[in-house]
Image 1: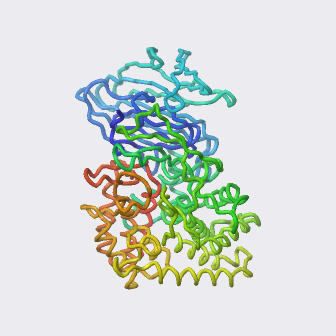
Image 2: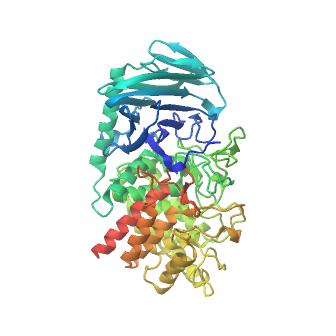
Image 3: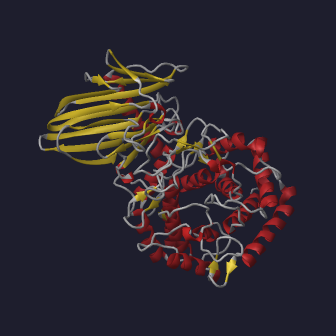
Length: 606
């Protein structure tokens, strides 16, 4: 059983793929060359699905950090005999400065071991298992390292240490003294690509240095937030950038699949895709945490991926593969035991063909927020955004699966109606840029009709709040967004009552917010889930917008306090243990942190 806590992992990224590395120096998750590729190392989900560990042979205490303004990880191991550091990075390409971060990357994981004091015996364990652990590749010695062949994979491990090969694994041991540097590199290719090769130590060291410089250059150029929790906000911005697929501009929801919402449960989903909603929220959050010069790439990606299939008669697909793929058919991987026996493990996501009409609002809200950054708005992009607004005007009356992607019956979710209102509101504001002045009267009429329906049918006197779907009495934290998107002022009595209802009746013992009560059965799934960090940050943001800054700061601190030792957040928190749950790191949670911090800053300035 894979039992390492989710919070024990740290992310490295080259803006194409991601690796997760434990505090014990083991790469337990690596998907390459894309975020959604099958894993090469998958011990995160099964003990036999592959890993690559580098750590002291004896007893040690470890600590770690990201190097300043980067996603380059440094782990320090202290032993009775001495201290070593291991620096890990997915290498950036040559001359990756500023906006060029993530171009021409070599698909190379670098691990540099440096002696700090004394001398330390270090063990290496290399066990590649491509295709989610299905393959046991053939390992062979070559000059300067080890190759691994299996299926379509060609892996080359550059190692200055001679490793012993047995049972599709390589192991070795070496001594590091103060001042020594021992550098390893793992490069991956397929049969049709330029073959991976052995990298000399000096080139690995140079590329590691260039990767640090590349991240720092991006941070210096993009990040100028000056408010409370600046380090957390800027770090979250880098995490969101690390979850961006540079070739297309797509933004993934998280770097992993099937980390559960309940230990041992079945609410395990593949988040390595680009949701229109999550990616749009990410673009807006980067407006706060970083200068989102990648807005052109994102909206060009959306135009290309979705424009051929959106209009009043055809709903916008809610998610895509990072290359723009539409078919994300979900399958299970029964040979994987799952994290803490949480089955099934899934690849693909069955929500890809759901109807979720809220996505029109998130997309047009991002377009409006980033309008001055979209410098390449051609006729195709205008037509696409107009079609999105027309779809909102046409489809807002439809039931859907909603923001939480329920797998039960479609319903008239209030949040979906509100976001259709947002779509039309922002399209009206963008009408000049879209050259769509002739559509404004129709858009305005639909916007006002939505508003009337939401205010009339979305409020429940018995609940004393706006509720999950029309005619229901169930609370839903998504309705906090009514204030955040400007549908109602946060200090409107009905809005304040809804905020207070969520804070009092939709929280765990710590005060963390649930999305909704699973026992109400609306989502069509068995089991429970943890408290949702994004919703908790929404509560902080709503309190700030209502002028309750003391409450906002307390809720923010509560949610942000669940970040791990290197500032990463998962999707949820176990209400019983306080452990992080769900896919990791989760873009939604870092988006919530950024926006809540900014809202508190704005409220305190007022």
